[in-house]
Amino acid sequence: EPEVTQTPSHQVTQMGQEVILRCVPISNHLYFYWYRQILGQKVEFLVSFYNNEISEKSEIFDDQFSVERPDGSNFTLKIRSTKLEDSAMYFCASSVGTGRNQPQHFGDGTRLSIL
Amino acid sequence: AQKITQTQPGMFVQEKEAVTLDCTYDTSDPSYGLFWYKQPSSGEMIFLIYQGSYDQQNATEGRYSLNFQKARKSANLVISASQLGDSAMYFCAMREANSGYALNFGKGTSLLVTP
View 1: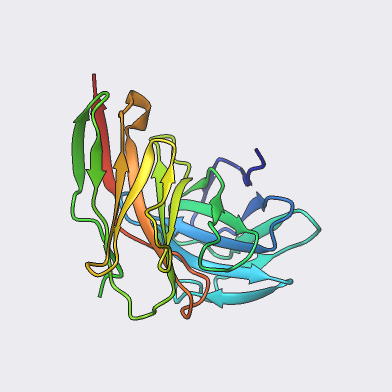
View 2: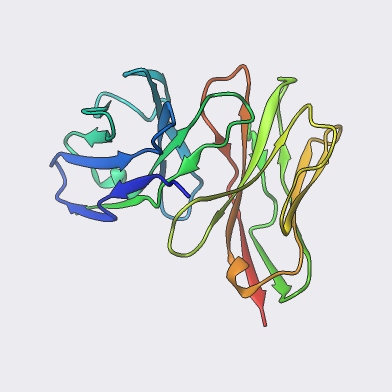
């Protein structure tokens, strides 16, 4: 069964450094998403992406964050000048469409630890 | 206000028994979708089951079924014949047709299946 893949599984970074999280969505999916989950808390939406542009973003997704689809398969989340509070599990997800009945399929996540 | 409420932070069930995980939601949008995800201790998010607001019948997917009570705005997940591998966090999520692409998640219920 096709799946969303994320790399790396764990990233440790010094505060103030830039980090890039990578995702390969399911191949026939057109909509891509990033979510984050701070330890012990619920999953929070960051951003959705379609047709090479951001379609929606939350208030968490400030100027520190950016997303890109650099080629036909990868989808990346960049965090500039990381802060301690950016430590979280980051999930990439994708869906075929955006109908209310379209499930978003999640990757295994990247655990980001900021020191 | 919370869109999704999961009132049970933790649940225990004995192997082979059935268990119900509660989820209530808040929306004024007549068109919405409700999703359940499983998060094992390894961290990945696994899509389990979907229920649409216009669906006449309760959704079923193998050992998972939804007890959907639209008037009460509840969508409880029923797991039949529990297995040890069902031990995980379970998240209820909602997407409203007129509110963008984001899934709104509840805080989750931790399920422990005992032998």
